[in-house]
Image (tube, rainbow over all chains, first blue to last red; front, side, top):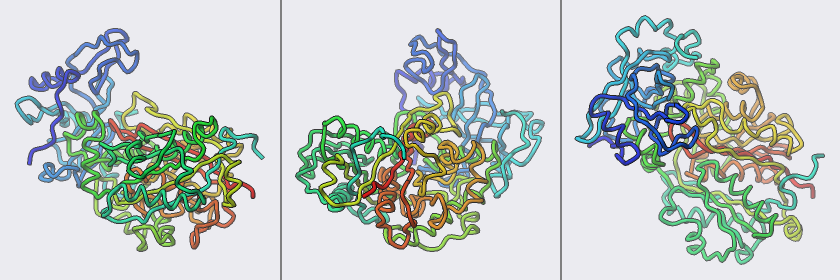
Amino acid sequence: MSKPLPRVSEVNRAFYEGALKGELRLQQCEACRKWIYFPRVACPHCLEDRLGWVTASGRGSVYSFALVHRPQHPSFNGKIPIVLAAVALAEGPVIISEITGVDPTQVFIGMPVEAVWEQRSEEVAVVHFRPTADWRSRASSREGRAAAFSGNPGGAGLSGER
Amino acid sequence: MPGPSAFDGVVIAGYGQSPYHKRGHRHPLWYVAEAIRRALASAAVKKSAVDGLAVTSFQMPPDNATTVAEHLGFAVRWVFQGIHGGASGIISILSAARAIQHGDAEVVVCVAADAFDVAQHMDLMDRFNVSMRDYVACYGFGGANGLFALVEQRHRHEYGTTREQLGSLAVTQRRHAMLNPNALLRTPLTLEEYLTARPIALPIRLYDCVLPCGGGDAVVLMSEERARLRNVPLVRILAGGQRHNHRPEEVVVLKQGWEAYRDQLWADAGLGPEDVDIVELYDDYPIMEVIQFEDLGFCQKGEGGPWCAVRDLSIAGRPALNTGGGQLSAGQAGAAGGMIGVVEAISQLRGDAGARQVSGARTALCSGFGMVAYGRGLSTSAAVLQAARQ
């Protein structure tokens, strides 16, 4: 069974064209210069419709995460738990995605991550994030990880996030 | 005594709840009809007197509120369709009250109903709106459970909220459900069982999640003048509020729309959080109840966890929380989740709640929350209700 695919439209075509090249493209408003994700027809800050597409750094940090044991669609059942995450991109927007390429129990709030791509069809690649090579140096505490599995308060000593 | 309320001249004169069924084995419209039938009987109103209809149901498309009027034979001059998910129930009531105040309708029925099972609910989430369909559903995000796990994890990170604190809410509500013959989950639940339950989207486990089911809830509103002729106990709307797309630049939102209008809500009601006997919060997850206690002014932001844990929120305490068991233990019949708390509050304020009756209950706060979109619920609502003096 195949995984659900986004619909490519006039609104998001540039994002998915970038995805096929391994580029994480964000919209940036040409009037107020703010960064935008998810793709819009007009700037949600100032309503200007002159939105440029800019290749972002692809870097960010984990703002929050969850270990999904019951995905909403059976196509995901083969790789449980899925690490669902909200990633705060270096440019500002927060993107909902998955963390892959790491033991799920190692993920923590503040973990530095970078974009990687999963080819889903000829037209669509989906962005995931994996820890950057130096992530261990940012793991100043294990509380954030432990929090997902116990009743302890989560991650009070973690750095990297406000 | 508070001054004249914003909804003066309008009262809630009746309420009704259909039987709740696991795996909703009747058609969604059956739950709509059954809830309306019971609400009209409770208000001592004939069907022919209804001239306004508000309907909220996720399963209605391609039908809508107008075609529900057709199906059930209501000739009306005011129709409302809830488009705010679990916030719709209260919003439909506030809108109906305005319509009655302005003479656009005299007798309005507000109903919310659905007939879901878990698979249908997950399918709904995958295509709930365009941002969910195109930017979230391509991941194994686990439906609403996954998104609210992100909220809980972040709340715990920021404020130190614990699983035990959240569990105390689920355990209290289960005790209430055991006194509610129409609740679907009526076996005892211990804190230990809550903490060690099957993982769903950690930190969220099984008893953080609602049971999708079939059911419907309805209320009847009319002018106070008209209601006085009927000899039924009446409930007033002291205040109400709604907000959508609060904090538009955030994705994982710990401060939700209620914070924008809670001061006005309490000012309009002429009382404060400490004065309510009952709170019927939108309990899609215990973490959202904690956030509502914070954002509705019961405690400071970040203190919701400890506040809940040290308080008696049972029907013997004040305030009593989700006195019928809430969605967590009575079941979430789709859009009816936004009305079940209102119906329970009215039942309490009329003194009809039987074994779970809160003694001397006079004032209730109800809240709604819904329309999950890119990582967050967009819509919040709240209302303060009070039993009218006879």
